Structure formats: structure tokens, C-alpha cells
Image (cartoon, rainbow over all chains, first blue to last red):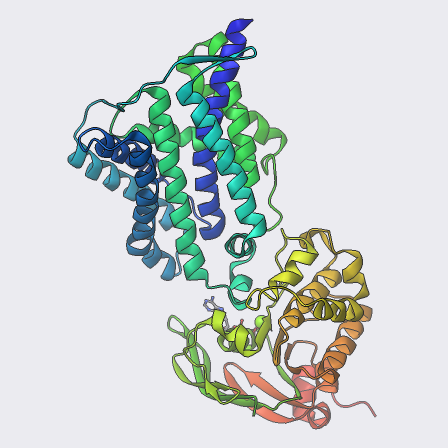
Length: 291
Length: 237
Ligand SMILES: Nc1ncnc2c1ncn2[C@@H]1O[C@H](COP(=O)(O)OP(=O)(O)OP(=O)(O)O)[C@@H](O)[C@H]1O
Ligand SMILES: [Mg+2]
């Protein structure tokens, strides 16, 4: 029984990391309408930057993390403007863009390997003490991850429903041409979206590194396909769907690990995806707007 | 003149869609733009609202040269387009769609909302529903309502009657007349040439990227050439 509670706790932590990353991927997909295969590289960048700022440069962990997140956002904006946007402007065939982001992921991974080398990294901070919350047991780091992810989800909800930027993002994802003739500066909204997406990826990377303790230069890519599973499960481009998909995939993979072994986590994630899509091809929360 | 278009050229890659069209719309008018499929009607409206870039020629609105002005800034000037098909945000509620009309001005004015609800009582009954779940006619009403919320000087309508039952077409056309009576200038693109010419003060006939005839709506309704090409036969009687 206690092992079940323990794995349920792990599930919540994994779900939190997945939620941060899937919402970032989903927001960007919604606004630009193509999938970013290079997203895993931004997770890796988050881990590596925080490592550099806090280990060799000796900044306190919270400061390193706080600096890393907006830097990841800015890198995402630059990558969009310099690499992706020119393809979009050329009347971007979505298939080309998919391949371009795929190539981009290889390039970014190689740049990071050149800069940081290949090897294992770990943050200076550990997991912290074990805390018991009812039947659950979490480390301090895990509780922080869950807390931050929950706060970010509320923040994203408020952004989408209460702010001008959020409304513009929803409008662009619903009908880009109409968004423009409605007076939305689509270039600015696209840039803001990439910034947010990069920030969320950076935060998710830091959370992932904290949780797995020891990571490699391209560890972000390992999570990418599970992130895709969560996003597609939720209904692609649907932000609330991504949150729900992350919760389902996170909890079910960790609980199943108790019974089928942790080596099969990704297999379980895709099994859930296949089964759900057979029943609901449009995902858990279908989009009304997307063709 | 509210809108002056001078020798406008627009291309899609190597394909020239507009080959030098000139037209004017005066304040308070309803001007119709008719023509066969592929004549360039939608391209004209998209260029006016800033969705297509201009290869040559000039567009002036309220005396200001807006030829190269980005689309999102034209709404503030009072230029508002209702695109072809369902020009709305299907995943948003009807209310949020209407609110998008005032995106550039901030909060929606209750009086503007009341005006839309008065014109389209059906829309107020559906206010909390996702716009994509409405019927075709209701969607077109929301699309026009959204544009009205921006208080346009010039309303660009791209085939508002497309896909609607005859009764609804008549209703939409009478609402366009009412909107015009309330002071909004209208540039109306239509396949439904009979009704459009009946409503319009003046009209232009577009043929493969060129304007071939222009006259008052009534004169064009009686023009044998126009009748044969666009209205399905000689004048009645
Ligand atoms: N995105 C595009 N790429 C290439 N050519 C295009 C594109 N959009 C329109 N065209 C071409 O430009 C010409 C004018 O098209 P447009 O859509 O303006 O016609 P239209 O008068 O609105 O026709 P319809 O009555 O069918 O709506 C057509 O020959 C069309 O094939
Ligand atoms: Mg058209």
C-alpha cells in the first residue's frame, strides 16, 4: 500500500514537470501552428545554464534558476526570429517547418555538447529532507517542483483569460488572419509566445534536473516524446488539455512503474496515448478552431 | 473620398491577381464589388485590410497613405474587414468574439454591444456559447457584430451571404442597409450580384484582376452585358 502512495507522489512530481513543459510546447503550437521538435534542447539548456551559474559561477541556486528562465526565453525568441520565422514568412509549408525544427534540435544539441562537453552533471543543491504529508512522502525539492508547477498553471490560466496578451494568443491560435485584421500585432504576440515557451522549457528543465539528480547534456530530449504524448493526449494546441494530459501521463507512468518496471515508463505513456486516441481521436479536449 | 485605390497591383508569387485596379468609396456609400470566381475580389479586400502586400499602386484612407501600413494598425483608423467564410474565432464564446472587435480600444462600450444585440437579437441569446457551435447564419451575424464593435468608418464585407438560405440572405442584406443608414460606409464583395446591386449606391465589376465596368447599382442591374455575365440573363420584362 505504501509503495502505491509513494509512486502516486512520484507521479505528481513527474506530472508537474510534464505540465510545465507541455504547456510551453502547447502555447507555442497554438499560436504558430507547427510542432517544435527542438523543444527538448530548451529543456537541456535550462539544466545546463543553471548548472553553470550555480556550480562554476557559485551563484545561489534560486538566483541561478531565476536567471536561467528568462535567458531560455530570450534564446527561444532569437531562434524563432533568426531560424524559424524566415521559413514561416516564405509561406511556410508546415512539413518543412517540422523538418527545420528537427534539424534545429540536432544543431542546438551539438552546440551544447561543444560548449558543455559530454558527461554527467548535478546541481549543488540536493533533494532536501524527506517530508511526510498524510500518506505521501516528498523531498523538499519535489514539493517545490509541485508548488512551482501549480503556481505556473494558475498563472497561465490568468494570462490566457485576463490579459490582452492572453486574449491575443487565443485569438491567433483560433484564426490567425482574423486576429490580424482585428488589430492584433501578430509579430509581437508570436515573439511573446516564444519567450513564454522558452521560459517554461527552461523551468521544466531545471525541475527535471532536480528530480533526476544527475543529468547529461541532452537529457531534455529524453523527456521530449513523453511531453508530446501529454500534449497530443490533451488535444493538440489546447493548453488546458496539455495540463490534463501531463497529469494523466505523469501519474499513470509512475504508478505503472511499480508493477511493470520503471524501464517501461515511456512505453506506458504511449500505450495510454494510443488507447485514448482510439476512443477520442481529437484528444481529451478537442479544439473547435483548428482545422 | 473615404477610400481611394489607385492602380493597385497585387501578386501571389508569379501569378498577378490584381492588375492595376482603381476605385473610390465615398463616406456614407454602399459600394459593391462583383465578379466571377477568381476575379480578385477577396484579394482586393485582403490588400485593403493589410493582409497582402502591394506590388504597385496606392491606397489612401481618410486622406492618409496606408499602402504599406501594417494590417493591425488599420483597425484603429476605422477600417474593418469581415473575411470570407466564417470570420470569427470558433473556439471563443460569442461574447469574447464581440470583445475582440474592441481589441485596439480596450474595453467594450455597453452601447456598442447593445447596438449589435439590437441588430442581431439571436446573437444575444447565444452570448455564452462557443462561436464555432453556432449555425452558419448565426456565425455570420457574430462575424459582422465583431466588426461593428470596432466602430468602423469603412466596413469591408467579403461575401456575407455565402452559404446562407435565401431568407437569411435577405435578412443579412437588410441589416447591411441598416448599418449603412446608421452611418457606416460599406464596401461589399458579393457573388449574389442581383441583391448586391439592388442594395449598392455604386458598383464595380471585376474581371481577372481588372475593373471592367463601373456605374450605379441600378444602372448595372439594367446593363445587358452585366446581366448576361453575372445576373443570369436579360432583364425581366
Ligand atoms: N494564396 C494564394 N496563392 C496563389 N494564388 C492565389 C491565392 N489566393 C488567391 N489566388 C489567386 O488569385 C486570384 C484571385 O483570387 P481571389 O480569391 O481574390 O478571387 P475572388 O474574386 O475572391 O474569388 P471567389 O469569388 O471564388 O471568392 C485567383 O486566380 C486565385 O487563384
Ligand atoms: Mg473571394
